[in-house]
Image (cartoon, rainbow, N blue to C red):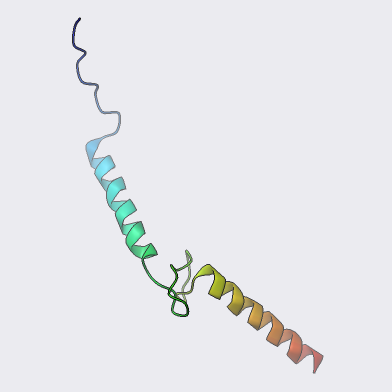
Amino acid sequence: MKRKPPPEPVIDKKLLEEAKRAIVLDQIKRAEKCTVCAAPCAPNSAESLCWVCRRLKISAWRDSDQQIAQE
């Protein structure tokens, strides 16, 4: 049997390295902790809150707005 030559890489090595670096940087960003409960932060959270604390904050704002409207 003949040995098959090693296949040519489909993806350029430079592009592959850049993708790997982007994944590592994304994982580092996700390592940020919520300032309230220390859970991982929600994506696009400018306040450094996890999705649960962020949702509770939004609900609290809505409730306070409704209470002010009733008075």
